[in-house]
Image (cartoon, rainbow, N blue to C red):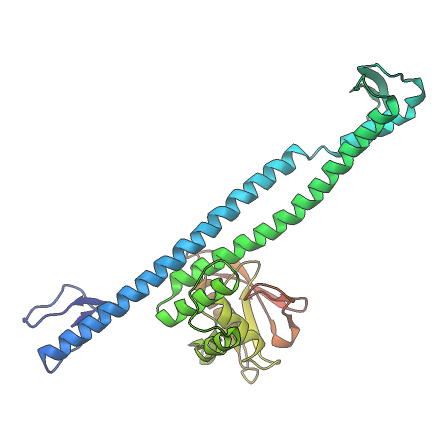
Amino acid sequence: MFFNEHNEIILATVLNIEPREYNTVITYSSFQELINFYLNNQNLSNTFKILKDKLTSCIKKEIKKSEKVIISIKKDLEEKKNFDRYRELGDILAASLYSLKKGMTEVELYDFYNDCMCTIPLDPLVTPQINLEKIYKKYNKLKKGMEYNQKRLIEISDNLKYFLGVESFINNSDSKENLKLIEEELSSQGYLKVPSKTKHKKNIKKQVIKTFNFGEITIDGILVRYGRNNLENDALTTKYSHREDMWFHCKDMPGTHAVVNANELLSEKSIYDIAVFCGQQSKLPKGTKLTVDYTQIKYLNKPKGAKPGFVTYKIFKSIVVTL
């Protein structure tokens, strides 16, 4: 049985033939043994693909929804960006309110904000005082709308970054177990409905924690542990590391959390190489320049109610690397 570099079956045969390119080959003692392995492998591969497609479909839907909302909010902000002009018009009208009369459709007054004359439309059916109140009311409504939209834009933009990070983790996943953790994460956030096999949510959490199996890589002789999804990032950062351990993460973008034991002596080269690894985990194009922050675990803060994988920090160092 011939496998490619991703450990996927290229060819299973009893004949003396082989594919043009392959990475590894395994010989079986019997035809039955080969068939059993092939069927089990294909079944596992199909299950993996179905789950990956399911998660990809879910996250792409959320990304598309967030992008659509962001476009709508930006359009609304652009339309309302001159809201402060209503306050100015109100002040101008208030300064000459004594000279106005009911029944006027407009009035031309001196604009002391811009040193010119301006025309202010009026409702002839109401008094000048009510016209003034309408203008200030319009100003306050637009101001509140702007403030809400600005907060909403930050919220949705943060969500989009989160979704893009999850998408990257899905694309990088090479095991069903890792996809299951991502499925649990999306389910716990309310983005994905997963049939529960147990009524006790606490038991579910315990089962998830037991499956944590962080990624490990040796860089310049130093063991680096890293999260392959946001639940692993959370667990690695908040539960399975010492407060003196060193933490690495790409600046202002979602991705893997990498942790190095506090006993390791980190040279400038090893810090650079670990930072490059963090960037590579985000699947950024070769040649990309990016900033990677690093600090000790004790300086990280997990805000209450924050999404999995999200932390804040104020004390840190940064390094710029090229992938």
